Image (cartoon, rainbow over all chains, first blue to last red):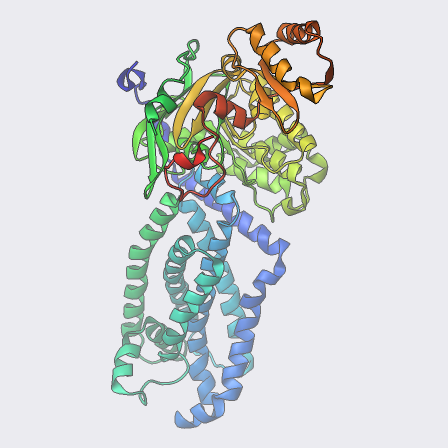
Length: 274
Length: 349
């Protein structure tokens, strides 16, 4: 018997396609799984709840006076400056966690099970992103509440929604990067270490915490195109007023470009991980 | 080292003949760098039967299962499962297979019921059906009482049962069991065997990998022995047992000085179709492979007729080592990591 005579004719491909409804159902089932985790282990929400409180208070009360003075006002002026920046910071900090969580999933056999089920393999990643976006929204809400309590004045409520939407969009693009790291790196610890390596220069080399005018020229060249700067400046423009359109566009382009490049890589790496 | 004599001549040519094939594998190859995890594997599993894939650690068993369950793509060769091409039709194939691996593929933070419900939803069951299916399988695998506890609180056996239940949600026609009882205690092992036998009773085709001859004997009707990525023997279990010598009879003469005469007596009997006896001087015993109870009786009769008093006598199932020794004339490759070379010299008897 040769291999040729043994191979049965290929069966139809009709049942190979996965409908949009199935995709949503699969993603929903996996979102539910991740939400049940949080119920099982409420401490996993600690970062999303505490980080916005601690960082907002820390920056406002530690740097508020001196930087506010430099801005030509006082602490009140700095609150107006730093709270929209905090929104950009949250977007990146929360997004990072998706990588470590995803990496941990590979430590037990459950991923093998998912990958032998007739589901779109992207569903596993989409579910992670949906859950992480929920965490991001919780963190942002808490941060805004703390911000208002320490004196932040929202002049444009529509702008607030737009800013939150923009930071969610940008956060999603960062999540794809960390999903790639989560699927390729050996341990959750190394994903986290890698995350901080990227995180610190991007966050402090930006307009999140302080205006960039006093920075040296070479650094300004970096900060001006740092998406965290444009996201922070967008949030400022949208919530407190001022020019925002240019920064919004640059941020949207960053988010779209990162997603278009990283999402297919993440899904491919996930599908072919052996 | 002559690969021809090692793998070629000892091959049992009897092929499983009747019944449509549920799994057909031809010339499957998978490399990991220099290591050939699979080196041209052929395999046929008929519908509704259990095929045991027997081999030591690192033989390529898990690689084979991972290829057949679409987790990795083979470098060359072909594999069809339930008529679907493993490489070209992974999605359709995933609808008809179930996989239970060495490590329980369940979400430890979720309860047993939530685990099964999730799999049901991922297999496109409605909420109601997914719930009903989860409860039915919890009941069947005796997990109802533990249904709401997180899986991480389960014992090893419960986890494995939950894993089997998860594999059964989609009513697969082909089930892969990759060393399903490795690391389990004997009682739990029996539980898993019982469950597997029930599934086979339901008409599921099973591909079972194992390191244990006993497990293969319990569950499988046909056996494929692989080592270093190659099939070194295949056929019905009884045929293979005949080759290996079925059970081994261990006879210790009451007087150690009678060890040699005993061995001579047994060789003089000339039992048909069997390997000759071996003398274990350290244990002071002679080992004789036997095929049947009749032969056992004949051996005891012959020994008594020579006037040799038997000190102790016992029968043993052939160990995996003995299977390898008998089939290949080589000792089974010792458990090693994947980076070992293909050098067989060091493993000679």
